[in-house]
Image (cartoon, rainbow over all chains, first blue to last red):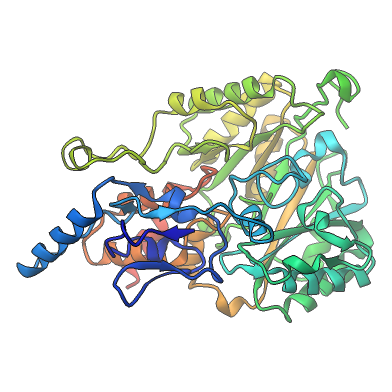
Amino acid sequence: MKISKKKCVGCANCVPVCPMNAIFIGPDNLAEVDREACVECHTCFRGLSFEHLPGGLVRWARRALKMVRLRFQPDPDLCPTEALEPEKLEWPRIVRSAFSDPMVTHESTGIHGRGTAEAKTNDVTGRVGTGEAGFVVEFGRPGIGVIFRDVEKATRALAVEGVVFEPENPVTSLMTNAGEGSIREDILDEKILSCIVEFKTRMEDVPRILDAVKAVSGTLNTVVSIGVSTRCDEDGSDPLHALLMEQGYDTWRAKVNMGMGRRSNIASGGKGRRV
Amino acid sequence: MTNTLHRFGKPETLRDDYIVFAMASKGINDEGAVEKVRVFFRAALKHNPINMGNAVINPLYRPEKDLTFLKLYFSGRKEKVAPETFISEISALGTAAVVFDNRQTMADFLKELRDLDLGLSVNVSALIDDVRDVCGEIHLTPHSVEYSLPFQGDIDRLPERDILSLTTMCGHGMIASNFARKMVDGIREGRLERDQACRYMAKFCVCGVFNTTRALRILETTVKGA
């Protein structure tokens, strides 16, 4: 992301809206983007409203108002001169956008977002079965960001634990060796808003894997959000809840797949079939 | 995607927060799914949702990209589009999400979805006990469940609790901590109305899963606590 010096009037409305604190007011009193901190999420460009005022006119008006001790201050969600300018990104910087802008579709998954549909479509994919646990470990969330070097540190540690990374996941698609958890060298210094590492384990391995995630998370310069899923029993209950409680985790909030999905595409094996 | 899973807050602060979403899987049940998603949203409208979106097009609360001096100062801002406008704009699949601030309306909507039998995967993101109770009431058996666990890692870098409660209502992290603080400060200094602050924040959540009712309550508590 760039901010046009010609258009910017230094109102600073874009400064607080950046989730990564990458926008600041420079010595010339105009907004600038710290390219190292920017993750190309486009939040500033997409989230701010635009009023198409000429930069020169607004700067003049600001000076005039200042002389009579008044301040030009547009609504806090507004860039008065449409000064934000997205850049055409090249590899490897484009990785930042793919993992930070939720409106960008990952080529590897064909869906928006930073992971797969995980348990949300388990009623038609059957990805996580009875007696299995699906892990969704998101690095950098909430709101801190992460560099791939830290993600690799974690994926290597998890690989040692014997986890098998979800092949359809965008992070897995960037691994050079999924068995070792190594990620391609040319993106390791790229910073992103967050990324999701997915894998599944047997239910009895959940405590050991959670300990491993917790241990490696403590060595990272970021925060980690963890989701664990499973398929429910016939009566809708599940063994994971009790297991997580035993391990001392608060489990009051969850996402529940209601089982309403059907494999309805003709090519997918017959109308109306659930898994 | 876990954009609604890790909403920060104690259970008592999450009692008015229910997200129901529908998804299709590529190659499995995506044929005709765009129209089914429109049916999903239209069914939701009968139950007074407070927000909706699908992460492909702008949600109900959206920024205005064509403001002019005249529009801004004479016509006024238009910060939320009519739900039917939003529904008619849907042309591609995403995660269709609807937010409710009331358990009963969420339950009524789920019941209607059960009867509609759209064949899409439907999930509810909320307090697990509430969802299980509702399932019992309307005779639905959950298929799978995904639990949110507490944040790990360098959690000292996280913002204060009230701000985190606001920002995590956009799971993609599009609502910046500093923007939420600016909203709180604006209210405290009398420059901003609370509901206006909620609308400003909602516009940054592209999936439309920001709960404006809960945000209003959090802002009221935060401002009172000053």
